[in-house]
Length: 150
Image (cartoon, rainbow, N blue to C red; front, side, top):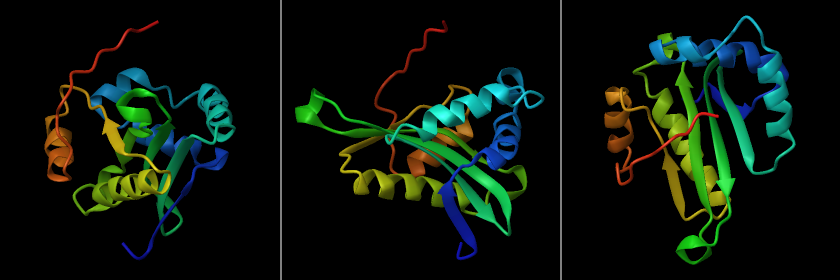
């Protein structure tokens, strides 16, 4: 992975990020790569919040992966700060080569650097391969998640 750079995402990266978000059966239903306006607005909001870290993995000048890391200070668990990993995507032609592991390890290391005591993530129930991947990295399926669409 020596030729891989993980860096903050910029507006120039948004089209590549959205393409990866849309590149599966779930994302194809949720994402709209034809109109980047809402994504660029979201990037502005993320960039202005020091607890949000939207990053891209770059190899040879090409975006090959992404994730968002959110730092959440809290009162529960004796004032524990936690992080949430969201939107993990690896470009289709990079899957199976260790890039996903490298991205998650980056997020865990950054969480430690940010004094987090807990890292959590969610994964759609249908993504059984992803569940096995996260379990191999030491995550446990300890909670049930709920969503309310507004």
